[in-house]
Length: 122
Image (tube, rainbow, N blue to C red):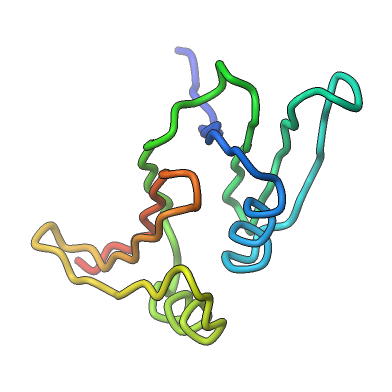
């Protein structure tokens, strides 16, 4: 039987500096690679933090603004403390307990995408 592997979402971005500020500076991801077909071409880059890998793209056909992804996280309370301590001017996420037995933290990026980090509490 065929086995499926990890999913790598592609999120659309429109400003490289804002993407770096949010994903690297605020969320703590590291840039794994950056690719352009030439100096004036849109950027496509891979970022990661722990086991989470995301691709960010300026290319018109890659992703659509307004995507919402869910990312499993261990010790969501520690992630919440880490993000709040950064005093990022555009996001001060809360920590929510859901009726479906998860603890969640949702942040919106500068491009209309939302990332919900969650941990099961059951």
